[in-house]
Length: 461
Ligand code: PXG
Image (cartoon, rainbow, N blue to C red):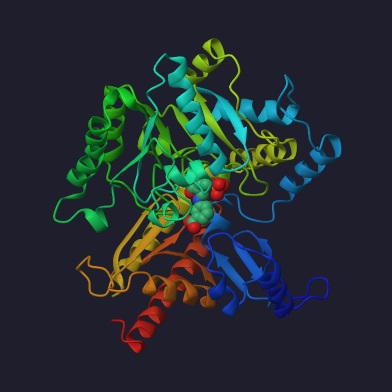
């Protein structure tokens, strides 16, 4: 057993149960089992406090794009902490890491985007989106344009604003959400909602729900549409090709701002710098976080198009918004080194030419498993739909049981794979090698076999 400062796994677990409230956690269930204690990581691999090696198929939480163990990020942060550990970016101040990271982001963003507003997380980025979009329309003399349209089952964070933009019913049911002025339309989830329609026709139908919502809330009141290029936390929902072009056509036809939440899809997840590039769309705002620093330090931001930035700057006066740690020097230094690694190691090319094709083949090979109703992937995002009797797309009667069993067995087998209801999702680091993709697929197949055996034993199938 690996010990840290003389502490054993049960010791960590007892103290964790006594003092630590975890995010998105049923503490009764957690404390009955005890937390898994992760003590170190290298590349795509984690080690727990019992010395078990686990393949991290989730890149931490969809974020460790360049993999673990990057000494040069630690060194860059150390240098920055020694030189200037903190200074704010309010009150006419700035500092080199914030300047250099803004410059770099402007260079990799699409040509119509040249500015960034910094914050500390994806949730704060989306709260910033709400405030910025409404401020923009107020400055344009249309303050009544304040409705933002999002999708059911979207995830945009856990603050009051982020959770309101998100379309998670379970979150809305706690704490009186959503806040006013947010509307939700159906998601482009062909597997669950497509029925007999072919995916491309279904994609158009799902996009046209936006047009219907615009009319329902009256076009003159609509400020923006927000969507993740591919929904991550909702279950790696990959929209049909017809979806995003139609969404953009509708936004432009009604002069509505388009926001692409790039928190998961940004920074190489789909083999391109941004998910917007992957789908060929040009949004007005792009909230970012996660892969911006590969999770080494917390940092987020909103990439702001010239259209919006020019209005805020020229007509705006003061925008009363920001955070103590907006553009934190150490976090900016981590992000800069992370972006340097992505460029100098040609990680996007590795993803496009090697990792993604290998992953796509390996993931697709799981489609023949009796439990798998659909295996889909885009870039290094994948999902498996678990069903009781294929080819029917009907779900298990008790939704979520099969997914939870599969997730726990994956861990036992040494693979982190997440369950969203009965959809297994995966998002390995971009640096995964062909050989490691093979290991991932073998672990996933063994986990599916074990899950099937348990479901049969428990008479759930
Ligand atoms: N937008 C998107 C698209 C996200 O995926 C956020 C915003 C919020 O980011 P912060 O940094 O505030 O957490 C996210 C976060 C899950 C899971 O279980 C997903 C996220 C966060 C926590 C859990 O899949 N995504």
